[in-house]
Amino acid sequence: MQFRDQIPIYLQIADIICENILLKQWLPEQRIPSIRDFATQLIVNPNTIVRTYEFLEQKRIIMNQRGIGFSITKNGYELVLEYKKEDFIKKELPHFFRQLYLLDLDIQALEDDFNTFSENYNKEL
Image (cartoon, rainbow, N blue to C red; front, side, top):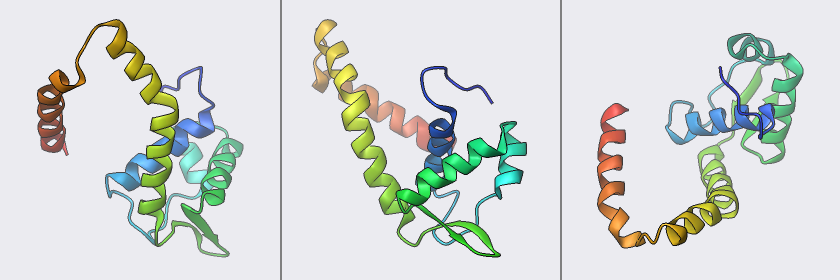
């Protein structure tokens, strides 16, 4: 897996987990890979996965059941959606708006492009 330098690896892994939840590939109350298995799969230090899981536990997206392992919480999907929307609005949207302004683009003009993207993205799933 290729990680970006500017963002801590544990947050990038959290994004992978969140994307799996949003795409409904990982469902509420479903077990997720163990720390060791996920670390092996992603070729990262197990401590990085521990940090990722602790971060997602603090957000109540996953929970640890003693003897069973980690799983998505009942309302994990809703919590991920809320977290990712807030994160997008705070971190990504200002840059996006700045680019629209600098390039003198009208956000309404992008609607067709977004609709085309959505249609193609849904076909890929």
